[in-house]
Length: 81
Image 1 (cartoon, one colour):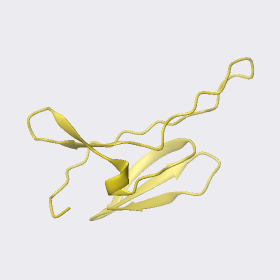
Image 2 (cartoon, helix red, strand yellow):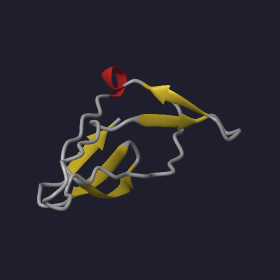
Image 3 (cartoon, helix red, strand yellow):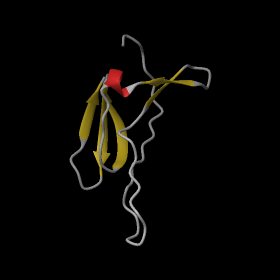
Image 4 (cartoon, one colour):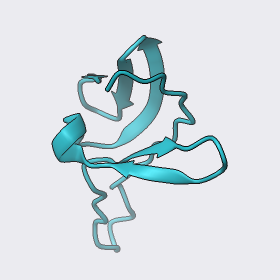
């Protein structure tokens, strides 16, 4: 995208519930870019390529243009943007 991106990383996609409750699935993830004034704009997944599945437990910036998503009981994923 040719821009500096500053991150406020948040992630939750927990689907595990008590057995007596139905399962709640989250989306594949969403990207909101900060405008610097407290507002955000949506970056469509069709453009950014983000498509995560599983229970996200942690997110970490590991290099410029790369985020690591750690999951519960699944292989971690790296998103390159």
